[in-house]
Structures are given as structure tokens and as C-alpha cells.
Image (cartoon, rainbow, N blue to C red; front, side, top):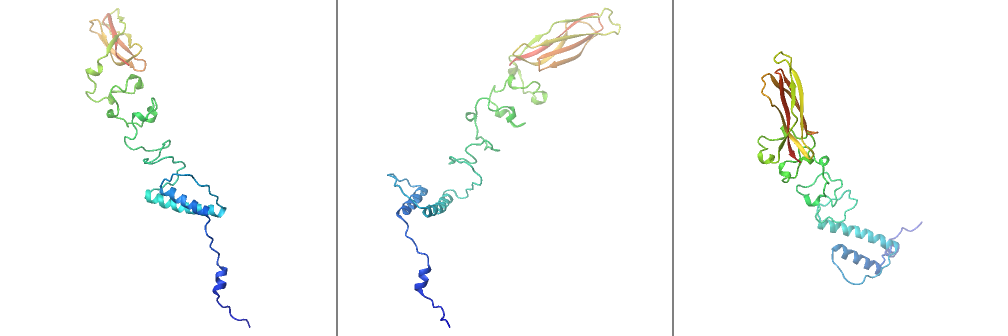
Length: 252
């Protein structure tokens, strides 16, 4: 019959793993890690240290814990879930660069941050700009697409004499309607045109009779703001009568 196993302090200690004293290189590495993470600058020569594989693993483990603790203390609540690169973000609310930013803080971008011709109509949402967003004389005829501005886009009394200082008229050629037999109910028609010159934009138009007949009428007036010209059609049953079209133009 075997004797029961007796507890032996000496036997138990023999089975415990021996604690190894850290090497000098390990101590230097940990000290350097703590100082660097803590933010204290140390001037002087850098000692060359050599760590074995196990010591390198311990350093990585310690550095993760120390770094996380320091980040938590300096930036409580900070969460960076999917940042690939963050060079310097001392004051960035969203990102240092914003190639794919969906939103920008109000007044975060001014003229100094925009290159010439970097923003066109495709980058501006409909109805996102008002008069307060535009500088004086910042929009001219060359920035407005043909037929882009109609009466519904101009407020009542928004355009006065000061805005039309450079307006002038171009009178088209006089057209004669020669109705040989007047007042017989057989109306004859004629077409007159007028246009602005290069570098001008048509802003208005009309047609007028230059003779004093009774049985005459302007049947229609057709403007074309793309080509800056106007076409008028007159009809007469009053012998020989004359009329013309007129374009009102401004310099671009």
C-alpha cells in the first residue's frame, strides 16, 4: 500500500516557472517607451539596444496599453474607427483633407481656399445661392446661360435705371408692305428683324410702324436671346406702309 502524497513546499516551488530578471536592454526600451508616450523631450545620445524575440513581444504589449491610456487621457471620447491616414489633426473636426467629405462647417471655406475656376454650376446645388452670397459685379452676361433668367427670376422693381446705364438700341431695316388695293380686306404681311452686335446681350425688344396708316397691326414679335435678335411680323390693308423691329442691348 502506497503512502498518501504529502504536500511539499520544496516540491511545489520546483514546479513553478522561474521569474527572470529583465535584461538591461529591456529596461532601457521600456523607459524610452514611457518617456516618449508621456510627451517629455530628452536630449542626448541614443543608446543602441538589442532585444530578443520575447522582449520585443513584451514591449509591443506594454506600448499598446501605455499608448491607449495616454490617448484616453488627452482626448476623452475620441473614436477613430476607419481612418487610413491621419497626418496632423490638432484642430480638424472632420478630416485634414476632404476629397470625399459630404458636409463642411458653415463659413469653413472662403475665397482664399478656392482656386480660380474651381467651382462651376455643376458643383452648386439648385437654389443654394442668394444675392448675399455674390459680390458686386461678380456675375456678368458671360456667366449666365442663354434663356437662364426670365421674368420669374427678377423681383419686382429689382432692375432700375442704374442697372441699365449701358443699354442702347439697334434699329433694324425698315420694311415696306405695299398693299396696292387698300381697305379691301386682303391683308398683306411683312417680316422685319433687328439684332445686337458681338459682345452685347439683348435684354428687350419691340416693333413699330413708321407710317401713319389705319389698317395696320403688329401680328407677332419673336425674340431669340440665344442669338440676340428679334423678328417681328406686320400686316397691312392700308396701301403702302412701313415698320421695323428694334433690339434693346447691353454690353456683356
